[in-house]
Amino acid sequence: MKKIFLGFIFVVSFVFTANSARAELALKKIMVDLNTDVALLAAAIGSDDFKTIEESAKRIANHDKPPAEEIKKIIGFIGERAPEFKGADTVVHDGAMIVATSAKEKDMKKVVEHFYIVLQGCVSCHENFRAEVIKKFY
Image 1 (cartoon, rainbow, N blue to C red):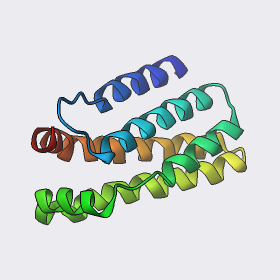
Image 2 (cartoon, rainbow, N blue to C red; image 1 turned 120 degrees about the vertical axis):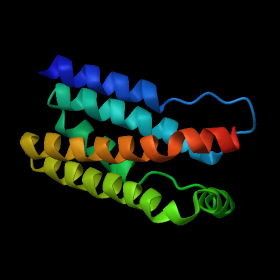
Image 3 (cartoon, rainbow, N blue to C red; image 1 turned 90 degrees about the horizontal axis):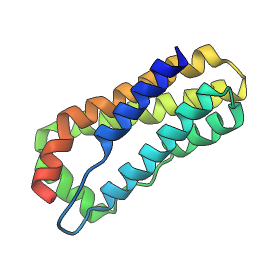
């Protein structure tokens, strides 16, 4: 089970990586940092390391935000779909906070349950926005 879980994380991590030829948005570094924290979180779940689970989940929940000017550009580009973009971020944030709290309580079942919710938020956002954002800004 853990091998399948970690394999899934590897595939998801690979999908999240973006190459760029032009000047990068701050959003890219934020996504790279989130990818690192998601990978750390997955590894910590695999080794029952509740301290690292809690720390990684908190970093995911409280990740940096792009500068206001960049947010304006992105929101201007995605237009009416902005609430969906924000909604995916909220799913990730809220899920990660529950993961952190559950890790503190050493409730692995709840950690894993909400980690999958975090991943669903990430994947949903990437499926709906990643290619367009890369095409437009890179």
